[in-house]
Length: 215
View 1 (cartoon, helix red, strand yellow):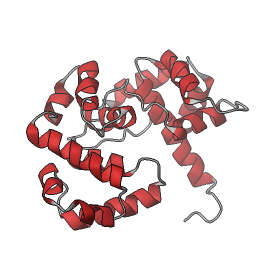
View 2: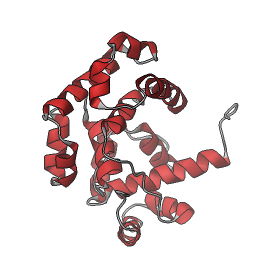
View 3: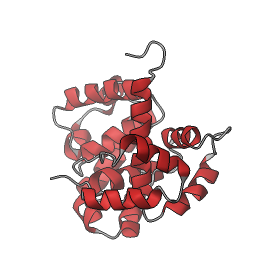
View 4: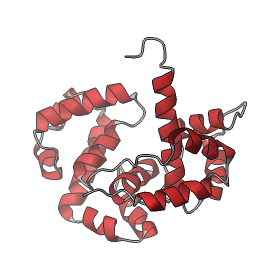
């Protein structure tokens, strides 16, 4: 079952956002209503997000693919049953392995219940996710976007979003995280939709003009 908001709601949100920010208006002109990144609310989704932190998409995909191959099925219990050194051998850093184990422990103990997170009001859902060691604000907001379909979840300090906004807005300098977060307040209650507009435009732009040597 898709967790994406209905397309009519996304279109209404995009129509509104286009009136608040010329960068978003330009993205909307190029891609229209963006495709929502939708995933099932699982431990595997959280684990994949952990693996993607601070490394390239291609490197993260390769590492997570090895983890999936090793575990067979990525579940909290399977992670706890695995040898941490074997997970590290897949290419995961020691801190990331510790985070994967911490999140798995929270799910098995009931401290973190993803069904409860998905059903909770946004602020309560954030609080439950952030109570778990290893889940920071960026991971929590991505989970709320992808697995819950929260239209106002917003991954603070996402470099791709900041870069896309700089280029679309023809700014000389990219905003830092604090300034960009403050700027994004004008997009409430549709910051998650704004993020999808920016990601969607960035994907199209990269496909049109790939970096040298890109496959």
